[in-house]
Length: 185
Length: 143
Image (tube, rainbow over all chains, first blue to last red):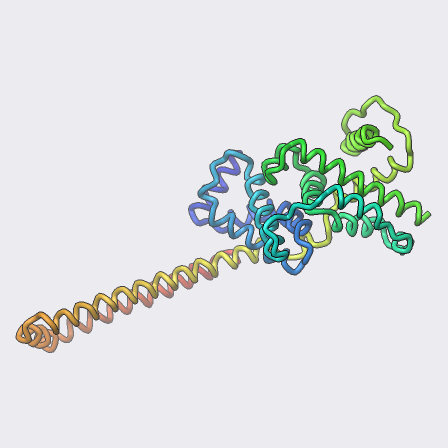
């Protein structure tokens, strides 16, 4: 924490080398999150840059009420979600999750299951098909290894919702993967 | 399979993969367990996009560009304000100041042109040195 404070102090005094170190420390979090929320990979790089520019501009308003990574995660999440809203032209990105899960299960195409592709590619494709809420929670929990409370801080979703989304997303993916593995064998 | 069983399997696999103390429970459904194990491992792997571009370098370069742009805008604004004030004072002088005074000022400028030239050249020199200094500082930044 003290180390974090020192780094922030140096950045606020105009030390760009320290900011470069900060970007390197948190780029995995930002790239991972933005690339899961924004499907068009051409936009991911620009958005990641935008996130860190916002971090640089607003660093003086960081009050140490959360971890710096959580604060950066919030900025990344909001920036990515706002981009998706702008692209889709929708004010809200709420999805009927019940309806989605029904369609997701019903969309099993035996031919696509038989197409030989690596299990890894299959899972990544299936993750990309999930609603934004599920993708976000999966990424933050598994890829970034954040706790439920940190995910709550970043996304603003209640603790119970985070747990529920994580469970449901993993179950959906497991069902699909089990079918894929069966088709391969 | 019931959701409660699914929850237990998810917790079981998670603890196993994280090397935590395993829960005392023997789950059924080996296919599900196998699928969950593969899934959990894959979800922890980075997607291809991570690390493909040198984000830190690009961010720092962008910040430098933004700072340079802000400096240029500030510089242009100062020039504009000075020019406007100068123009305003000139108009006021022509309108309200006695022609005799203006003539006296112009005569002063004509007789002391060396001093005026020195002041003007000094100001230009300071500006040029400032620009060179700023440029050198910008080049030394870690881009």
